[in-house]
Length: 293
Image 1: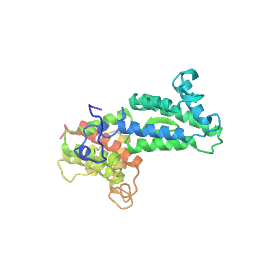
Image 2: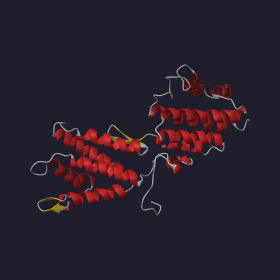
Image 3: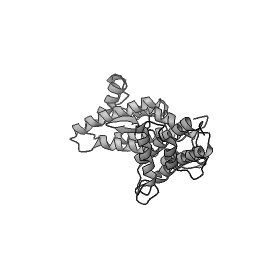
Image 4: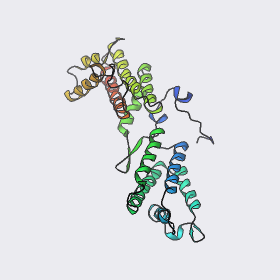
């Protein structure tokens, strides 16, 4: 934790308002912070507490046996005992160590392993308790609230922004033109920290327009100006994609019109799509047309 015993973190706080330099400054990509790890441990512990117990331990004992035999590659002899039963407290000391100290990839493998057990538990109890879905929902909520770049899809943990897209995002954040990077930085903060999807979309678009203004030397340049700039110089399929992007911002259902994308009911998925699309557009404009200007 960089020599700090306690990590101080407030959504939208001073450290975030100062602006970000990297996607990983605000989104957890290849690591998990202590706050997130603690929340994940709480979900796992609470899911265990909810398991059905009968006179011989029931699902709690089966869970512990599954951990040691399947996930830890140990034997039943290795399970901590308390009297004639298992020592749950000691077992969860081990679970806590895994969640707090292990690499994020090991933690995700562990989380997926528990999904498999809870599927078995649901079948054993004739789906009376909905263990698996409640667990997935709780883990997913942690991922969303703590800006973890992963979601659970078809019971597998999958990244929602891949490495190539992250590389494009980083390039836009490091754009030498301050107005471009400033708008784009705000788009990321709005999307992930403030969960303001409408304004995230608007800031993404603003980063593109800022790049257009620089290229055209016109402070009022829009995406329409950029399309004129690109005329006959790019592949038709790419131009079509840009035209659709422009359509989001200018037609009757566009970002600047009531009840359209970016006006009150935008989703995370829409804002993320615009974040990635606008990044690709900004980088393309800079790489292919800045020298000409």
